[in-house]
Length: 389
Image (cartoon, rainbow, N blue to C red; front, top):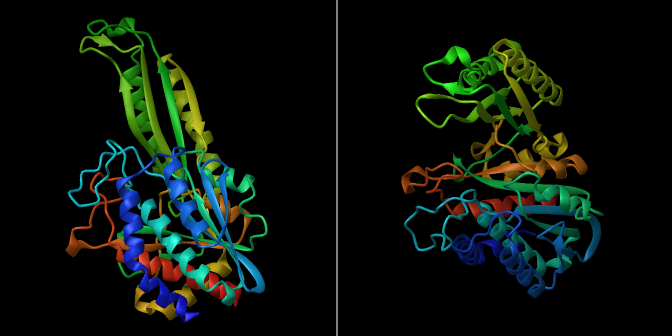
């Protein structure tokens, strides 16, 4: 099977070409029509069984091996973000206000590379490979849940995925057993007060004042009500209230996020938030609407498959390049796959300070060190082959 890794090296430049084409032609969540067609065309040309429109714009490829064995699924996401690309390079996005600012173009190209080399050596496979090209990871509800409901994991025994990650340096790989990435929830609080003249505040119920108290009071959840060793974030990301300097605002709106790893804590924080909102508004005689939207579940790696990662990656790259990741407060709908099948989600370093690849995900100047694609492809392929052995 080492020949497959040699084959990946041989098509590395082709993988880079796919990635740059997709980077120039990004598509938003639930609009990945051309991207899905691009993927399906390549899979079909390599003799892989293809299903399109899986749960939306998802594409599923099935490669049947030459010998009986388990079926392993590998996943890549395909969607881009509503961000203007501010890089100056030959493959800058050609679509105004849309760019691959999270690396999904590289994820797609990495998985295409694996599919191509595996298709040539399918007779050597002791089992089957399923290639999951998922739509709509960047927006909730994401594409993973709908693809699962459409049967993408039928007959699958295990599932693996990779995220190229610029905060980590190229050449290094990371994951952790158990809880890995947070459950990202969203909340909206609408405060209804009583508007009036800015010089006569006693005749009003000031929604900006109430909302300001809420911004402060909500922080007491993490600082004083949650066990300090249980990670939790409550962040107000936007505050909208008022239209003029001399008018007391009748309504104000807060919008923010909660991040947790513990399902019980997730429920507890939601309840505490509503009690704080209710109490703060009652003191000021304001009314409120509290909307809490559950995001993706926590990404929880299977313990056995996390051990497989440690063993396989150490053998491939050396112990000095393999790390237990810190907890990651970002969310990922790969969590849905892991609720259905054992598996592991992995971060592959894609940052390079010397090359100026320093910008975080979702930044207008985001880019990756493209060598990370080859490392990711080798690792995913090795994980699948080890499972099949």
